[in-house]
Length: 376
Image 1 (cartoon, rainbow, N blue to C red):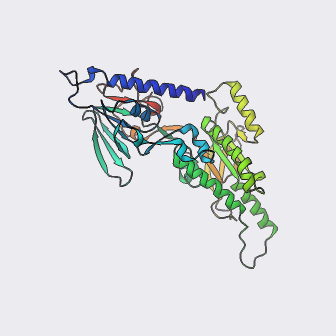
Image 2: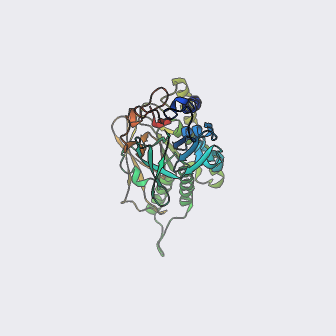
Image 3: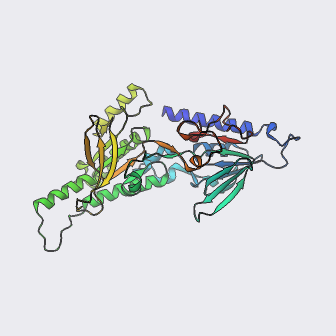
């Protein structure tokens, strides 16, 4: 919560800085202290930064337009709670079009930038048709995407057994898959007509149930730790009533490649939270690397679906195979495609746009700003 509070204060300051800068007469056309028409402010992104600026700018003074593939602002701090049903999805989102200062919204992705012409090329998310938007001021608040570090099998199984936790649809997918795992585990074993169950088939059935009820969380940051806690509470309270014969077989594992979880927090807080996870019987693996995700083709599943396993590299260098029914991956951030494919600005750490003390992108005449996770 400390980090979130600092982030919110930073965004408020960023919104105020942009508002003051855009209101300064020195940005008006040469030879005039007033704009002949309302200057157009184009905002890329509807997250924390973009939403804050769009709501702080005066719609009577600026032609505020926003481009984002997401037609809502998402309160990401509560996303783990929606995945397990503690909160409903509608409680953590705010439609973009409810902003009274917004003159136009485009549900699209920005693909190319031409700063000299002051134009942005966008692609709509429905028919993938391109269109151009002109601007007087551009605010890039595109955020970041999930970084898989090219781990084999993660991208290939994303949306099937592996899920990210960054957008609202991710939370919906996680909730659906979680319940699917329990329903599959509750089904009777598949037996061919006339076939008599054997001890071997019964053992395979139990192995499959254990796999389905194994939930792996990759990454030891605040989002994943909160999700693991929410998940364990959901499993021990709600699921215990619905699947009383299965709840004792549930296993939750956190896999962190670094030496500790919540690395940005104090040691005292880390120890306190780790003790809470241990009381909840969450298996925490630090200094453990997820090497790859694999589908075992040599195993015949008794509940349908694929037999998924995670290959873990333990601290001592040994390899371990961990079967799982669902994996939630939130292990890092990477720049979005708009940043990696545009070389119109200088990049800094992790491919982020370099800005000055006023969030302006250098060499753009004071007309392009970058804020939030995409800037440094």
